[in-house]
Amino acid sequence: MTKQTTASIQAYEFIRDKILNGELSSGTKLVEEKLALELGMSRTPIRESIRKLEQEGLIKQKKVITPTESDLRHIFQIRMLLEGFACRCASSYMTEETLQKLENCVSTAKTGSVEETMKANKEFHDLIVQASNNPVMIDIIDRMQSIIYLFRKTVVLHKRPFLIDEHQEIYEAIRAHDGDRAEQLMKQHLQSDWDFCLHLLKQ
Image (cartoon, rainbow, N blue to C red):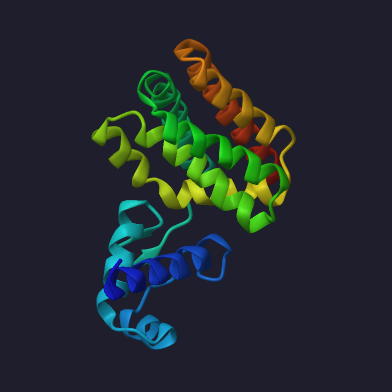
């Protein structure tokens, strides 16, 4: 990984987190020079991270937007369709090596810290999507990463019940090459995530 790429990731995560935790509120205009100064880097990685966040729907014309409940619901509906299908594909294509990584994600999330669980949760879903061998699907889900991160953070921090147990069941279905069950379990898993997050949003 080049120094430039590392800076872009750092800038992306910094801006994304400030938007998602409310420090950069809706309507705030992002000033490249100011952010570059704050992070101690050139404007190029800042520009790249803003472009990525625009693709992901958190920024429009360099201004922060706040996704509505309707926006979030639509994203979950797409995730259920795509990740459900990815699970079906993974049950046919996933290699032994990747299955081992998937199992490790479940194990880590059962005993790890919040940070480790967040990382394991992301890797679990990413491995399944990558195993679909469908570059178009991978690209679409990649463009939704910021919103997906928001939900992942919510379900981990608020300790959604049965979250990791459901990962265990999905892993077992993929390992058993049971595409129907794997797809159904992933859809149910994401529906539970959405129901849980919606309950918190409305409080």
